Length: 194
Length: 194
DNA sequence: TCGCTTGACTTGATAGTGTCAAGTCGTGCC
DNA sequence: GGCACGACTTGACACTATCAAGTCAAGCGA
Image (cartoon, rainbow over all chains, first blue to last red; front, side):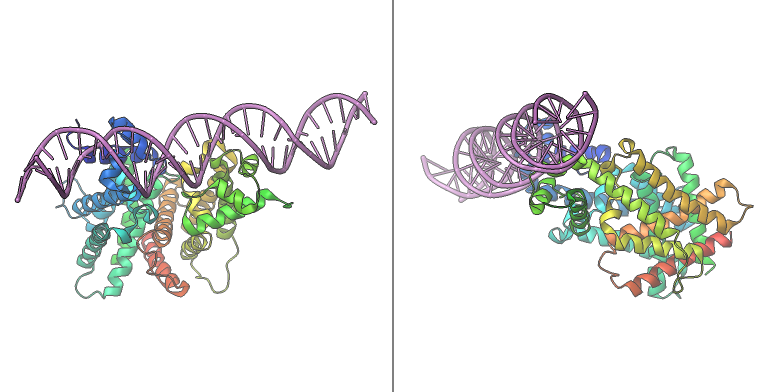
């Protein structure tokens, strides 16, 4: 009866994870909600970890697309600030994907090279952007350190905002933007004044 | 027969989490390993989430202690760099605790006010340290933003190093120190040149 | 000493879970 | 007509947390 059970299951899983986290996720419950037998989803994903790999794969692709999209008019003019902002906004807008993307214990990257490659691409996007800022004179090591710095800030902010102690303290998008920009500004000042 | 089952269970749980993450943790398995019935641990903790709350509580206390310890001779002279370093080193040295501390879904802070308070204390330590750096002229908002920036960097680095894509890339303590210091230096430059 | 609580368990049962192993059933193809 | 194959279903297994009763020794007031 359902035109595409696979999509339906995937969507339900992402929604559940966004609401309640990945741990309580139950294949059987999803199957019951979709009105199919408890083994129907298993047919499409084979394994509990397979659905997480798939979600992570989608997530990394969406992530890379979001990061490398052309600059919008109401975004910060600075590239690094913009990327930090996008990183955090992506995480907040795609909780269901983001919560899985950095959980190696769920994804089993080694069994899903596609997901691994999508993750590498995502990091590549970051490296490239930082390389552009620093200019051609920067060493690969320098770029790597700066990219790691930027990534850490954005990732730390995102996780603290989603699951951490900042969870309910900064709910409004406008407030979040102010915070992210303020934090990222410090970073970029540090980088360029180096 | 065992002098203190509670401690034994707690220790086993922390070790398991450090090795394999919190998700596969089984009360029954721990009980079996300890040579007691499957309900014995349940008597001490009442609930699966209770043991996570306890671990988080211990973690936050150890964390606060580690952060506010007097400066050691081979540490960076800069306070913020030192705190970032300690943060990351704490996370790496206490994976079992750290993995639980920022997982609100596991801890149920609202049911364990003690753990909540310990977490607040930890954030208080950070705020205080940043306040000292900025001096008495800094506004509370400014301190908060800077503390969040520092926290984000340290937290992002720690999580990326423990479970993220940097997991196996920077294993050596010496390399880690170089990276953390380099990243933190950018931060502090950004803060003081503000 | 009797009765009673209380802490530290044990035993048994229940519901829910992922996963293995067989079916079933309609569609398309040679 | 025969047959493979995708998309399921049904049934069973081992494992899990959790509820509900025991058991059993230590401690204590009367």
